[in-house]
Length: 243
Image 1 (cartoon, rainbow, N blue to C red):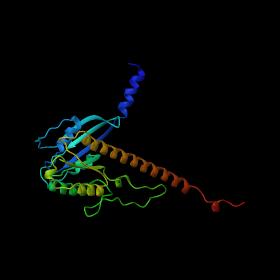
Image 2: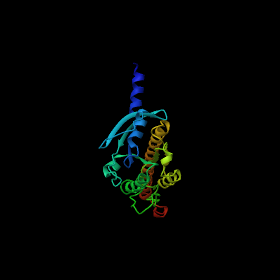
Image 3: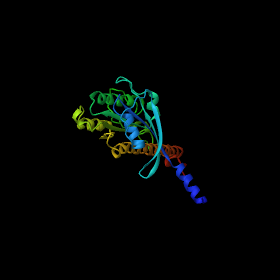
Image 4: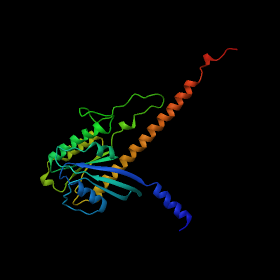
């Protein structure tokens, strides 16, 4: 292998993007089936794990390699919410409910406020909405803090092949996604491969967008602070000695 080829491989490995995704949803909504469908393209209908499971796999998104680390959370009941450790660990959240289970949809509405209290949107309380509140710029080049960009999310209504048992309408999912300011789709893990993969890909893109905006915001503040310091050290014309 030539030295140029080796350098090319090293560059590719060093530029590998990584993303940590927590898949959240109530019991029985099909979280594990969605994850396995995405990672292996296979469908397994029955899972009986009693603890969280973590998967790592390298896949292509927009023809670029991405290392996905996916946490399959294990909700024991509709009263259980993800821990602070899970929320702090994840770069983005895939929120899953079943269109055949009204309780699972209500669970997602609760968990989005739970996440907002702990990670995102400027520390909002459960009583507030999830719409970001612009901050007053601090100094020259001030910008909205990266913590106010909000955690990246994608909303999925699973089991779309079971429309005869539907309890949650498509319109309700669209309204919730609008409140969350995230993408939304109804999928069937048992039948669809591309649609399931698209949801994970979209969440990765959202994570990357937040990262880019955070870097830009930080750079603006750094450059703004430097400009402010330079200005403060200077003297005005009126302070110069007269001839």
